[in-house]
Image 1 (tube, rainbow, N blue to C red):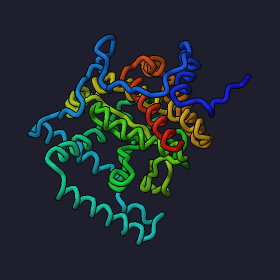
Image 2 (image 1 turned 90 degrees about the horizontal axis):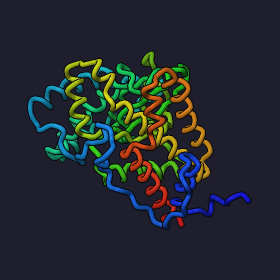
Image 3 (image 1 turned 180 degrees about the vertical axis):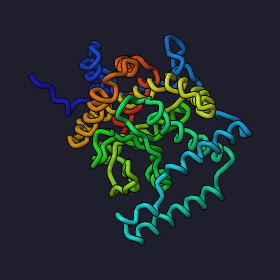
Amino acid sequence: MKENYHNMSVPELEAKRNALVFGRKYEKPLATVTVAPLSPEPSSVSPVEQSTDEEADIFDEGPVLEKIFEKAHKRVLSIQPQLEEFGAVRNPAQLEEAREKIKRKKYYIDTHNTERENHQSKISTITEALFTDGVSRYRWLGEGMESYVVSLYDDYFNNIDGVVRFTREQDTFEGFAVDLHCGLNEETLQKKFSFLVGDIMNGRVSKLDFLLDDNEEPFEPIEIPKFIIAIPSKDAKELFALWQKNDTEALKAHPIKSLIMQQIVAQADALCLVAQRSGREDLVKVFNRIVSYINNTAVSHRQDLKQAIFDEHKNSIVKRMRNMITKAEYDQTKKAA
C-alpha cells in the first residue's frame, strides 16, 4: 500500500528520508524537532569542523584587518556591477529609484552602525572577495563554475553576497546565489534558514536585480536559488591571511572547499525535499539541476570534491544545517496548520 506522505509530520518525513538516502533504520520520531547547538562535536571531526567560536571577532580592529580590508575593498569595487551599466535594460526612473534607495541605506549605515557592526561589515567585504576568488581562481567548487560580486543594491536589499554561474550556459543564466556568513552562531543561521525555507514553501526564490554577463552586458532581473554558506571564524582568519599573502597553492588546497561544497549539496538536497513536499515542482527541478551540474561537470575530474560530497552526511556542521532546515519547515508547517 502506498504511504500518504502528505499526512506525515516533518520529523517523520525527515526520518523516512534518512532511511531512504543513507540506509538508516526508520524509527518514528517524536512530534518535536530538537536542533543541536551549531558547535562542532569535539571528536572525530576534520580541522575545519573544530572551530568552536560563535560570533567571535576574527581580528581586533587594527592594521592587520585594515590592510586586508583595503585589498578586499579595491577588489570588490573593481568587479562590482554599477547601476550606470544597466541603462540598456532599465529606464532612467528605475535606476534613479535604485540610487536613492542605496543612498538612504548608506546614510543609515553611516549614522547608526555601531563599532562592532562596522567591524563585521569589513569582515563581510573580505569574505565576498575571498569567496569570489575561491570559486573563480582557486576552483573550490570544481570546473565550470564562476563567481561574481553582486551590486550594492542586491547586497543591501536582496541579501545576496555573491553569485555562482555555470559556465556551460552563455546566453542564459544558470547558477545560484550565496549568503555568506563568518561564524557558526546558531540563532543567526536559524533565522536565515527560516526565511529561506519560508520562501521555498511559498514558491519563491531570491531576486537578483543587477547582473552582468561575462561580456559585461546587463541581464534583466532574474530569480535565483540561494544557499547559506557559513565559514567558521577560525578558518576565515586563516584564509584571510593566506589571501592577503597571495598564497595560491595553500588556498587551492585548503579544506574549506570541501565544507563549502558539502553545504551547497546538502542544502540543495534538503531544499529540494522542502519544495517537493510543498508542491513546488518547478523549484524541485531547479535544485535537481544544480546537483546534476555539480556531479556531472564541476567535480567530474576532482576526486577531492567527489569524496567531500560522498562524506557530506558525516560532517557535523552540515548535519546541523540540515536540522535547521527541518526545524524551519516544521515551524512553517505548524504556523500554516
